[in-house]
Image 1 (cartoon, helix red, strand yellow):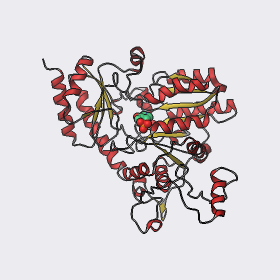
Image 2: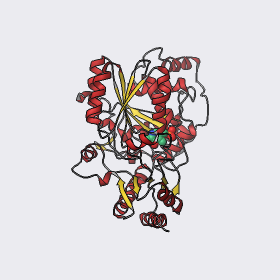
Image 3: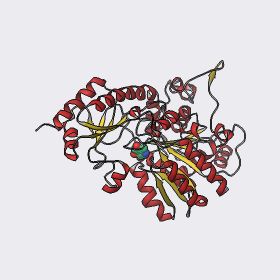
Image 4: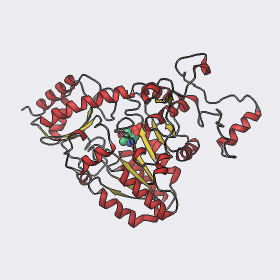
Amino acid sequence: MPKDKRARKFKHPITIDGHVLRPESLMMSYGYNPEWSEGALKCPIFQTSTFVFKTAEEGKRFFEIAYGLREKEVDEKIGLIYSRLNNPDLEILEDRLTLWDQAENAAVFESGMAAITTSLLSFLKPGDVILHSTPLYGGTEFLIENILPKFNIDHHHFYARDQYIRLPELAEQYGSRVKIIYIETPANPTNDLIDIEFCADIAEQLSEKRGEPVYLFVDNTFLGPLWQQPLRHGADLVIYSATKFIGGHSDVVAGAVVGPEEIVDTIKFHRSIMGTMAGPWTGWLLMRSLETLKLRMTAQMKNARYVARFLDEHPMVEKVYYLDLLPEDSEQFKIYRKQCTAPGSIISFDIHGGEKEAFKFLNSLKLIKLAVSLGSTESLAEHPATMTHADIPPEKQREMGITEKMIRLSIGVENPEDIIKDIEQALEQAFKG
Ligand SMILES: *Cc1c(COP(=O)(O)O)cnc(C)c1O
């Protein structure tokens, strides 16, 4: 991708006398002025469906912009109209969400799936093709395989292990029909990595072939926004299930996208029509979560490193799937070095035996909770083959590297020795008798 196209996606940094402020320093205040709310230090919850216009002329102006009836003037901002179109809690949250990825624009949704669905439907039309990595999040895979085909939108997939061969083949074969390359990296639950820059280059080549933009969308839920920033590597849109690390407390379902102005604006327009925006309470909860995002993700990642090392040395564990344990001479390690800055806190491992041993392990955990979802303050464990990935037929699961003996862990902020003690005793229980 040409350098200028990449550069265009970034916002100017915020500085004090030329010193660039880091996102964690801005998460408490950016985008909010206490004078707007009686001096309240914290942004209140604007629990209102509609907003009062000062004059009829003002109302007319706001709608002209909201409905695209005329071009925005320089520095002209859309005023507050109605909470399906805009709301202060969402706007301030969106401003803060741009900071980690250094994106121009952001949009938040009431779920990760709402973010994914709205983003795809904003750009696809009948006859288009999606090329995607697999495995994808179950809901996304279902949308692409079972719902979009009803609208004559086709899909073809590639694996991490064959990405450098299969993706160019698919691009060659479906070239003029491809509209979106959609990837999830690291993949769930195997932590397989897809090369973002490589996919961005293919999207760029296809754009030229098709004579209109072909986009690379990246679901960055597992490592972002702290440990992987796909816009830097040429992605056109970054998608989050904010239910996971961004929310981080297992108490809210939400989604977000960040990217260049024009792409996110198009998505926001469709969000207004489809009604998939987040509510003010969700927006407020996520602003609160963002203040501790770096602290939480750093503590979780450090804990996960200890846990992965412990598992790797345990005689009852066959294989550990964790980015920190990639062999240094592997292709996967090269991708890791290029696009990730830390291994994150999702670990999968194969226990010796099969479903029986895996279930005994899960049933014996005392501190770690048996639940799906991930990225929260508490550690969670689950069995992908019969839970998160149960709708995938067994033979396809095998192809994806999902086995009956696989357990997925999401490591929280507890004391690492306590987490390890719990895993140690549950492994012991799994092989008793
Ligand atoms: C959870 C998840 C989603 C879906 O998000 P929801 O907030 O549950 O709608 C999408 N992608 C990934 C990688 C996820 O983990």
